[in-house]
Length: 429
Image 1 (cartoon, rainbow, N blue to C red):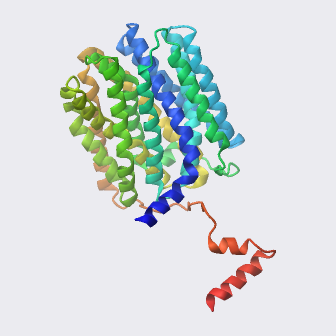
Image 2: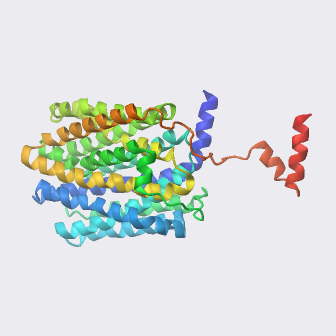
Image 3: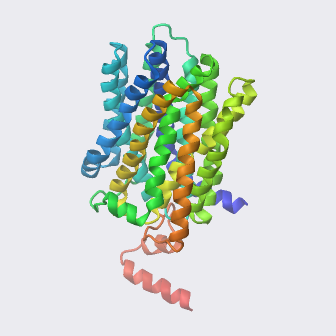
């Protein structure tokens, strides 16, 4: 047990600055998304148009995946991340200048571009630091960090802000702070001199369930982030309970990450994806019953929803990265974010239209229908492709965190080759 704890500490301790920056950035993202949704709903903008305006954010994601990898591969991950987050911090403050849905839609487009670009930096960097035997757990801890930040951001909705400016200042402040640990980290960045193109068709051939799962995940995540606060208010919850609904929903996703990630490292990740979809299919329609009951029932219902919604994406990313090389990871990260973005755009628009026509219950029914369709696809994929890869098919090796004995010995003196020969003879005798 002690050895296991030490090995986990050795694995994650170099990533602390990375996770700290992610925590602050996601806290800002979560607060801004819910704040803008509530402002639009409070201004009596229809649910359908609010869904469109807020979903434009993910159009920016798509533009980023088509262009940002060129900048990242040119200037490096740290410089690119710093530039994009700095611009994002400035864009947030522009919401305070003028309240207009179209103007806010343009800002959301630009904000989506910047955040998607920064996530490409982080995720491609993280996947380069991992291998097929630990990618699931590393991605899970990364997702725990993102959801912990996003959940914390929901609680900041309770800050007294009659003018609507203080919240925007807090969001800008959080984005600015996120720059500090990433900019100062000593963690080696990926080698940008080596780059290999990756097409969507090639990715689908290698990992079809990972590709489809990212789109489905986008529908789920986009539905919660864009429409979750609106759904809660349409269901009769006040601001305090709305923030609790969002908080516990994201906390559910956070708490499910590590156990599901560890499970996916030990077996075929496609089965894990199928079980996630099946669980959400069964649970989602019944959660409406508990929405307006006690806080404990609200917490349990939103926790279960989040556990199904937010855990799919990292498993899909791990599944795809199991099958590609380090040179392909930056562009592959962009494609994966683009696929999720497609779901984040179409999902909230369709769900918001259904909510406007059939009422708030359509929010949960949509999750059940989409997850049911994914289970059918997953079952077909697993049945007809039973022998597709599994663990450790890429050439990726973990980067040594501390020097091994032999490396320390052969690097001391003048002739590395001679020293290596001496050590070999020593070991032999």
